[in-house]
Length: 126
DNA sequence: GTTGTGACATCGC
DNA sequence: CGCGATGCCACAA
Image (cartoon, rainbow, N blue to C red; front, side, top):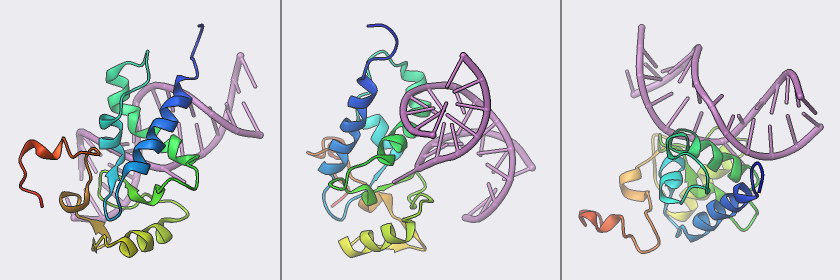
């Protein structure tokens, strides 16, 4: 093991796998996604906290068709500026996600974990 | 080996 | 609240 192992590639699949777990009508942000997922081994947590979001974006750059990439939005609760931004908005609305002024209410649609372990913190949500 | 670019987040004005 | 600029990683040519 010299240099960087294929761990990065594994992280990519990890991101896609998480996105696949996202239920319909729910969205996730790059930042929270990077924090929810486990960072690659040998990576500094500090840098991961800063650039983890970008790695997620890079991973989504090659996201397979079986990955609901359209359910991934940025911290702003808005759709990233991509070639399919318009299409993504339609897909989200088609799934029941309401866009307030082009922005998604993360408090309502931001999804956490498969079992909602993170959501169990209070239960104020539905 | 070097250069360029990027599906983000954060700070400042 | 909107826009501009910044930071540094990894990957592709």
